[in-house]
Every structure is written in C-alpha cells, then in structure tokens.
Image 1: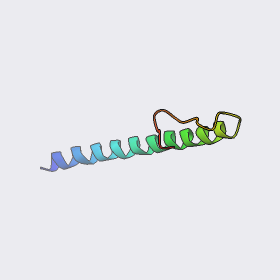
Image 2: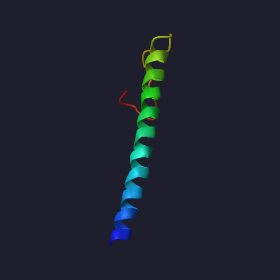
Image 3: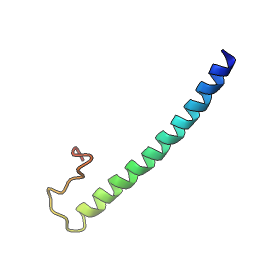
Length: 53
C-alpha cells in the first residue's frame, strides 16, 4: 500500500509538471495569436488548433 502511494505521488508530480508546461505553451500561443492579429493578418485568422480563439 505504501509503495502504491509513493508511486501515485511520483505520478502526480509528473502530471503537475506536465500541466505547467502545457500552460506555458498555451500562453505563448495566445500571445502569438494576439501579435499576428495586430500585425496585419486577416480578420478571420484563427488558430486551427483552438478555433474558439
């Protein structure tokens, strides 16, 4: 049981780190979208991966 807990703690730490990395990527994509929008890209420009942007 204790070994399983330790394994879960390691997995949680890994997933937490992965989520933080994904948040950084998303922030960069939002910044890029904003920058592109204000540097003459067409009004209908959208990030294909995030069509709601």
